[in-house]
Image (tube, rainbow, N blue to C red; front, side, top):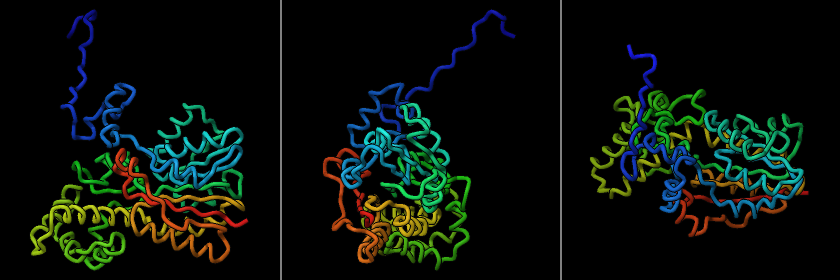
Length: 349
């Protein structure tokens, strides 16, 4: 035994593995930005997003569409890291209120705590765990029937994408999960095992417009797939082995589309979006504004059709004539903004 007066052993902090560590959990300088702000600034300057954080997309364009004013009530249907929420809260004061909804039980408490620490108390900001398909119920829990502004950013947050434990990408090996709420629903590995080859082919075609859906679906059923690396390797091997003469970039796009299609199915994203689009008119006050950010054609088609149908029916007094895209400056500074599309609508008075 050590003498009672001997000081405890000093545990050294792990060395930062290289100038640019590749593994998510090794990036402790980025995961704890207060420790080394300069490291975070270097990542931002390179056009990347620091690990464990999220950069809100098209903030100025969203504010221009929604035109928030002091005293109004807004709802952020996809609170995420709170980037859009902060911009809205700053313009809703004094007297305004923001309702934040998010389906992720891991990220919501962190964002709520951060906003509380910035001075946004319960009287100005309310956080709700749930799916935006239940928008009307959340508004009712706040003692309201309608709101003045609504925003939904349908992209996957960087906090989810970058963390290999969540299973959304294949940069690092991780469980093949992809659930926004890890405590509910069916992980992607189980979904693949349960579906037939024809079901998987339909899923890849409908959710991601994958041109090689039949080949990929057959490959996915050949052996159990439990990790993100196993899924990526299976798709890549099938496409490079087939007599298709695909370029590496085309193979990579098919891998990405496969991950996208499975994620959409795991989280039932299209059905959830359809519910939101149907409920929005009843949740907006006369003259209320809504803005939706989408990131692939399946989402954008649904939003465009719903807004145009609402305009023809007199539900909306105005809708976006054309999709709004991020500026070149923003896409250079944040590569994940490149596929974003913004549409808006105004509730008839």
